[in-house]
Image 1: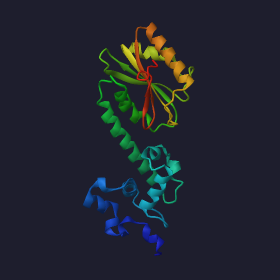
Image 2 (image 1 turned 30 degrees about the horizontal axis):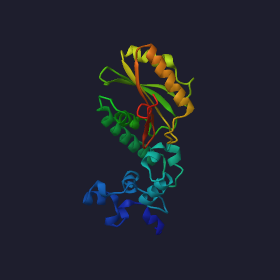
Image 3 (image 1 turned 90 degrees about the vertical axis):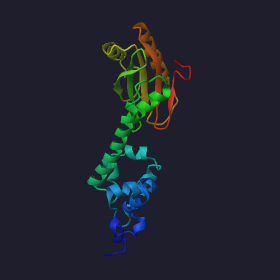
Image 4 (image 1 turned 60 degrees about the horizontal axis):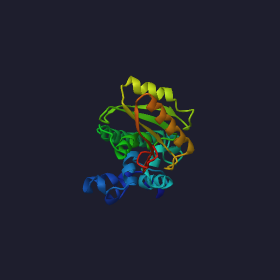
Amino acid sequence: MTDSETKLSIKEWAIDDRPREKMMLRGEEALTNAELLAILIGSGNAEKSAVELMRDILNDCGNKLSRLSRMTIEDLMKYKGIGEAKAITIKAAAEIGRRRAMEKASELECLNSSDKVYEYMRPRMQDLYREEFWILLLNNNSRLIMPKRISTGGLTETSVDLRLILKEAIMANATALIAVHNHPSGSLRPSTDDIRLTARIKEACRIMNIQMLDHIIVTDGSYYSFADEGKL
């Protein structure tokens, strides 16, 4: 066995360098993201340990787990030492994290502020590649009746069907709604289409006696609220 091959298995590391043993001795909070991910994949390649391999992948993601979550199985398999099984394991872990965040967000029954709306929608939108447009249908007390995805893809006036928005609101007996869409680019600045679409939705809701409370743009790290900014 060559020196490089000794890096293949976590079991062959010094005890202090083994992520599993480190977790047992010091707790999971003591581990870096790379060490936690190394536990999942178990081994690296002939040149790099599992921790080193995951550190390289994270570096390519700007050390952001959100960007790692956006990687496809095919993207991950481009790295030497990451086969299909390991790539699937990483994606499964990312999905578990997303679902945990969604469980917490679902406990927010009353969406009476922009930060609560962001907390509710962020797990659903933060890892998306494309723009999605949603409406949150509410009752008189700003309690959520149901969320509804309206469209996927580029957000323009033609891609969002106002008739569908109103139909969903009426069928749910909603008295108010909040529009939400994401910017995968990370930009919080509303586009001309965003502004124009907001005005059209508000007018359509007014005609049907449905209150449009806000339109929120979601990114991974923050949000923009038309209502908070006095633009609604």
